[in-house]
Amino acid sequence: MVRSTSSLIVLAALIASYPAPAQGQTPDRPVTDLAGSTEPNPLSGLPRPPDQPASLLQPAPTGQAYACPQLERPYFERDPRLDPADLPHPGWLFDVQLGIMGSSVVEHLGQTDPPGQVTVAVPGTAHTSDVVIVPMAALNWTVSPRFEVGYRLPSGFGEVDVAYRFLMAEGTGSTANPIAAPDATAALQSHLDMNVGDLDYASRETSLGEMWGMKWRIGLRYADVLFDSQADESLDAARAASGIFERSISNNFWGIGPHATLELNTRRNPCGLRWVGRLDTALLFGEVEQQFAELSTSRGPGGLPLSGETHLVNGQQVPMLGGFLGLDWRPACRPNLDILLGYTAEYWWNVGRLSDPDIYNGQSAGEVGTHGVVLRLEYNY
Image (tube, rainbow, N blue to C red; front, side, top):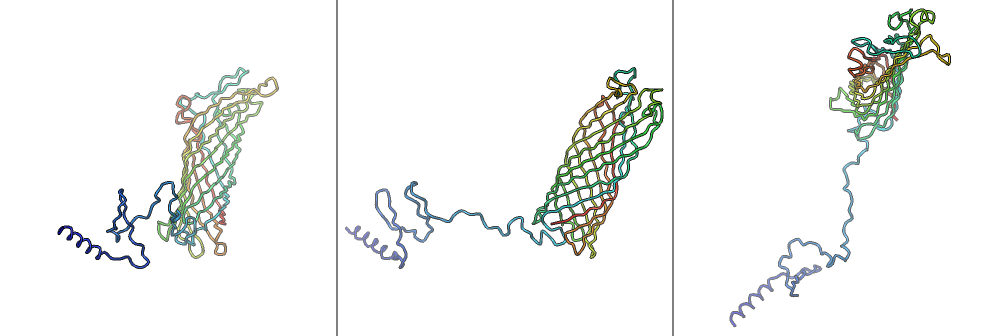
């Protein structure tokens, strides 16, 4: 009996010391055990998870809807720190480039060691097989245009450019080469056609300091390079000797591969002028196709000259390297316009080489070089 009385006294003291809930505050949630008894929550001051539905079939409590976090600054927005005033404005760009170009072909098609591995015979005649070697005449200077369109992204995200250029040159001359013109001096007609297309991503860098600027490009290049030469003797001289009055060679390379460009420029002076230097390179993977042909003074059933041909095809890798040095001017009254004038040169290796050792060795090849003065007009919208 004494023990029960002591217990009641202690329990009454605990209840009296327990603080009552403040006005407007929800009393502590009772804890219900499996037996259905309730007790006050002694941990009312600690954090408590929100009420959950009593059943998964009940709708979840309403909360804040999911949303993306608010960024400090959205992407693709012009930023004066990333798009300085001295750089071209973001947006569309278009430029036209005209080059007064000279070109040359280093051509040794059909020249093998030992000689005579590539021969041509004219069917229907008593003519034996010949080795056809025709030199290239000196090519005339010509105009080579280049067109480029692209879009420059804001916030220093770079630009995407598509460019295309072509060159068509021809030349005439004469040759007394005993293989190309064994009967008499022959007239030469030679041609060079080049078509080059680029798809690049470009970006400007300011890491070289205030006095220098840098721009790099990387992408894909497609090229088609064709050159041919034809030697014509007089009919009378050919009839009296070999019976062949025309000999011709033709070489065509096409390929596609990686392309890269690095451009450096100085800071503009108060007149808007700056120096620009550029290094351009590519490695193309494609195919070389060559043709050697002869025309005879003998006539066929239709009255046409009898002809013979040899056709060769092989895969090839073509490296190229080009450079440019010039002066760029941006008029103060036309900040969207850039005028570039300078000198450029480039060289293409292996465009006339067949690598198969059973047909050619390293002495038989064709290479192409171009050089000239370039004027480029660029407008930024």
